[in-house]
Structures are given as C-alpha cells and as structure tokens.
Amino acid sequence: MDIPMDSTTNESDYSLFSIRQAARACNLSRSSLIRLEDKGLLTPACTDAKSGYRYYDNNNISRILQIQKFQRMGFSPEEIISYYEGGGKADELLATLEQKLSVLQQQVTEMRLRSHDVPDMSLSIIKIPETVCCVRKFQGPLIQDKYHASYDFFHECVEKGIALAPEPFFIIDERTDYLDGKLSSTPFDSYICIPVLPEQAPKDALHFSACTVFSLLCYGNYSNLNEAYLYLGEQLRKRRLTPAGYIRLIALVAPYVGKEIEPHRYCTQFVLPVEEADKASLQE
Image (cartoon, rainbow, N blue to C red; front, side, top):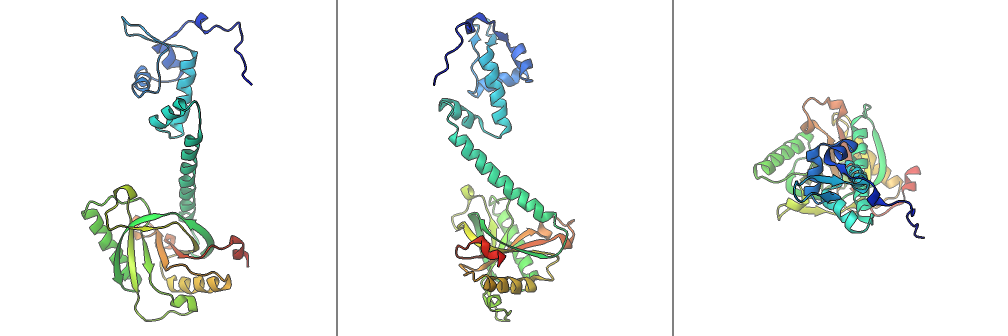
C-alpha cells in the first residue's frame, strides 16, 4: 500500500542548507562532500549557476548519512551507485556482505587456532574453499625436507614476480600407508603448493576445487607429526569415511610466518578430502 505524503508537508517550503551546514550535520569536511559528488554518489539539490555554490536539502543529508553507513560496511562507490540505480534492490549488496562475513568467519577461525596454547589434536569435518596454487614436486619425508622445499619454491615465486595470495602454503603427500595403521619407509612424492591470486595466476598454476575434508589440527613443534598421521588414519577408519584424494598438510602457523613465534604455538592442519559425510559421524 502506498502511503501518501502529508498534504501539509511541502518540501519547497523548507530552506536549503549551505555546504558548510551539510558538512557539519554529517560530520564531514566540505572537500569530502565534493568528493561524493565527483564519484557520482551525490547531487546537490541546487547549484547556483553564477557562484557555483552548492545547496542541499533534507533528502541530500539523509542520503549522505546512508552512504556513510554503506561505506562503513565496506561497499565500493560503484556498489552503492548500483543500489540506488536499482531502486533500492539490495540483493547484490547482501551477497557482498555475506561473502565478507564468510571471509571474516574464516579469519576468526584462524585466530582461534593461533590462540590455542595446548599441543593437542582436534578433529572435524569441514569444507575448504577453492584454491589456486603454483605447485612443485619433490621427495623427502622429513620435516626438514618439506621446510627447505617450501622455502626454496616460495623464494622462487617471489623472484618471478608472481602475485601471492595471503593464504598458508600446503604440502600434498602422495602416501596412503597411514590409512592402514602403519608408516612405511617406501619413498613417496610430495608437492609444495603456494597459493596465488586467481586473477593473476600463471598459466601453469593448478586449481584445487572446493571439497569436504576430514581435518585434524595438530599443535606443537612437529615432533608429533607421525603420531598425527596414524591418529587420523585410525579415526578415519572408525568413522567409516572414504578418502577422495591425497592428504594435505597446511602450515597454518609455522616458522615462515614469523621467527618470533614459539615452536609450541605451531599449528599444522592435516586435511584429507573425503566423500560427502554427515558431520554426526564425528560423534561416533
């Protein structure tokens, strides 16, 4: 139902505001108001053709305040303009906010992992997002082998001018021995994966699709990595989960993120792609 304006309300009866008054009401500078106009976000109610002075009405002030709110939400000028040009349809803004929320939730999760002080292990079934990486194959089962291969490849990527993503690198181990409750001495191939910005990824970069994984968080100075492999294999069998790929070791907190970080705070996330499973299986 359309609600008519009060017949006693005539907007033309109200005086206009100077740019100084408008700026003060919105807690902005005069130059900030002019920048909003330059970006196409605002049109003064009136501009004097001779003097160039700008004048604003109540609607202008309300719009400026709304724009400030949108800016605090992180929307770009183009997104805000699109909202108004679309008659106030907010679907695109909502989708953008939900994406920001998803990223923020991931960041909160990572910070919780970093704040964990006790070197123990915790399990979960989660979904991990798609990742684009530069990848290099190497061999070497020891943690020192993995570290040196990662450091060397990371250095090479920077030298080549590759735009890196602010995500932790990870290693894929082509091994399945731990699934049977043992660790074999048979050599296996590994791959160091350095995340890169998708829009600037080299042609030979590999895309890892989003997938469901069985995740094991392992805290400490790497002395318990073999134990972690065996524990993950044991719990996988217990929950009757079916592997759907090779295991990845994600260096969430590691020496490369800061030499000042104490080793007991290191956090390695073992993630094994699995066929879709009900999270309730973790309660078994």
